[in-house]
Image (tube, rainbow, N blue to C red):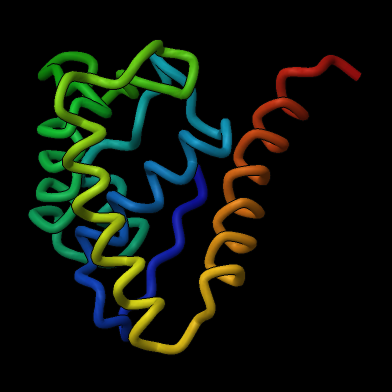
Amino acid sequence: MLLTIDLDSEVPIYQQIRDRVVEAIADGDLVEGAALPSTRQLAADLAINFHTVNKAYDLLRQQGIIRINRKSGAVVRRDPGSGPPQPGYADDWQARLRTLLAEATVHGLAPDEVLRRSGDLLASFHTERTAKETPA
């Protein structure tokens, strides 16, 4: 798994790690049952403190995206084919989406531009996953 973080970003490193893992799952790069690097290995690869990776993994665990086992490590628990979302997820997601839409509005993005960009991103997740699942 190739993970890129921006050390100069305003977004905390643990959040960037969490976001990149979620994006890799949505893109189809990580599937249910796929193992993630150990916290120490990922920390060494990114040259960051392993507690930062641990915080990202714990957040993913709390959100039901990965499971952590002392023997097998961190493993993807959910992927897009895992079935319906967990109860309450849609309401929590909508609250976060409201903030993102408010930011877009404050920065002057027109509603049609927001919808177009959102549609393009959603289509890219579906397209990438379908392309990986389709045999050549």
